[in-house]
View 1 (cartoon, helix red, strand yellow):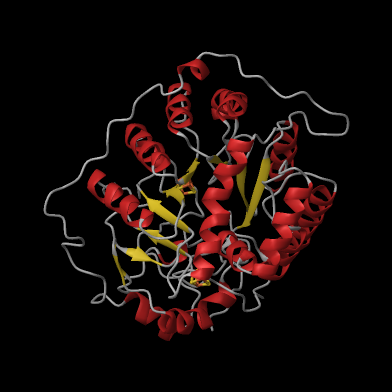
View 2 (cartoon, rainbow, N blue to C red):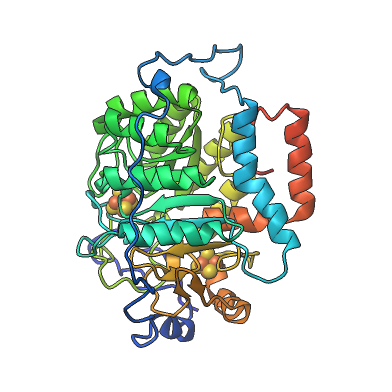
Length: 438
Ligand code: SF4
Ligand code: SF4
């Protein structure tokens, strides 16, 4: 098992290992011969996505949004979950879960990550998830993906990149088409291209949540995802969420160089009544030949930073307990301390069974850390996920993996927990359907 030893500070610092799974598993995953070869999908007649009607809801376009009043002791804005919004969330998550438990077989996806783009307009130094030489997804692949997923249990579609908004019109079409088919659509973005007009498009098309990825208040070396350059877009996005009914949350990566920013961004999110989601910086799970910053990366957490990160996590846990809305439970935040030290207990990863990724070329993989794997897991409408292979692989990768979504999915994929959650939500009149699952 390769050592997950963080790099030491200074120019003599050794780089972290280029991958973190066992060598044998790694060789199987990146063997040059195994990736499905072109043509990746049977595509006799390329399909197009329909042209979105805009605006579908003209009354919302220019209306001043009604911002809910601040209640004593609460963050400034409190969303009222109307019956259609609650039903929308249930249709995305709860009903597919119930179906997945009742149907025979092992492959019942609940969430799919559609990588519409593998290019990015920024270069966050920790990030290997972009390569500007790779062409974005075609309309044909996007449409076939959505149609195929619709024939399964899956009703949550998360667009992914790179930066999806490099092609805002394409994203508008994908969101429109998926929302019309009943998907709960999730859009992550670094927000640099999230102009007011683009917000109107995706909101009108029916986006359910916007993952606003930001690591610092002002840009820092190696951390360009900052709030300051996109403040105008952020303010508009926040304001319009109450009319359209989508939610927004900050997605932050705790790095060596942004710990004070994480606190400030947490307070900004709280003041604006939105949730936060935290990750802890990590090196690639498998080798990423296109990644330029493996050596001397100022964002990687070193052993000397551990006390500072521990203190930040303690601060976040206190905030969580005091009512700040967070995607991560207190336990998950606490587990980050162990992960940073290279300790992860085996867990119930459901990737390849209840979640999957679709790459820009229409090939499949179980999860985001495996984006660059060449192993053949099939293509759109022709998956080759096998529980035996997935389980063997996970024996190696689970103890190196801190994937928030897959941890949450593994934790929630439990009837008793789901029933408890539904009862708790029902008791609160379904007025808190965001946040962590505990
Ligand atoms: S904005 Fe996102 S995709 Fe682009 S480099 Fe940063 S983390 Fe990677
Ligand atoms: S544990 Fe699951 S999510 Fe993590 S790398 Fe392995 S298969 Fe992917």
